[in-house]
Image 1: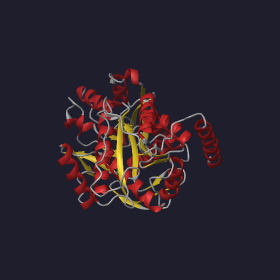
Image 2: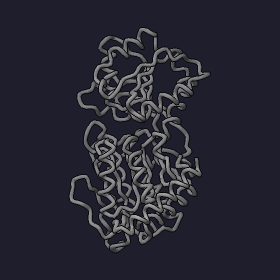
Image 3: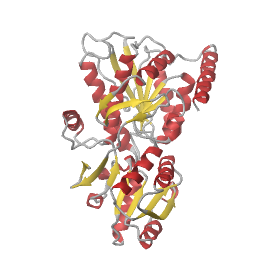
Image 4: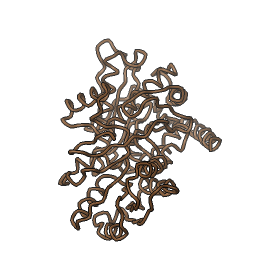
Length: 406
């Protein structure tokens, strides 16, 4: 696996050199200006800060519009808070950070378009993509340029398929297996139903690993119900099958929009089982028109609870709420931590903004695998060369309309 990755990087590097001879734009050009569009978020360099060419330029992409917008907007907003904090404190080894975040609408091709826009702007590293399918598409592009990529929440296995790809969140297999383990160890149910989206890598990846993790657990999976993106409005059949099978708990490895419909339609027929999900459920309390009382008692694996009493969490939540008028979700915490992880990796490798994109990538790869980071989403986080984080899983429960640590 590792040799395959290394070979891919060598081949890709040769392709980049060949393209450079044909007049390809240098993606490390920090003299480019950001395109004027409302998705761009750029920090202001404090007086006395680094001059032109002395700024690390971070490009990001995620859904800022569309049904998954709550993920991308939280990442963008929180990442900007981190950038501003770091710059106000003197930057990274005296150099400033600048963030340009583009809307990919949770679409693979639009994520690639966003990446190309960020390259034209002069991005030197990538924060994103926020969701799995766009993230996978962007990994193929960052490989060709040997540009460092850190996704806050792209959990599909292929989001870290190359040596330049890292993630902050758990992978889908980790989420699925950990969910099965948590349900079993806490004796939440003896009969479990599952509803999942066969057209979505995030959903199918978690489903598959959950089923493997369920082996040997003290519960039985009594119903496995499928749907697709084209049939995600009417869940009556799936719900009734789970009810008829006696499922006391339904596992929902999906994004929050679909989950809100399932909870609503199950309640309409008087069926109110326990619900357990993963990080894609984070956001259900913000669905327009959804009766949030139906989410009371919903449990999900997520590394962040806004009601945690530690100083770091409370400071972040207060800043986010002041700036944006709402409580941040897990994706905001992921985005915030990613910026500080990038900072720590840059410092550990003594990187400078005048390095090429490829040089910075190699420096960041070395830096991130050498650091230990205590953040909002985990303490003692470390990364291996395969791009995967090591940290303890956490779960939250929705109580009184808020995510509460379990």
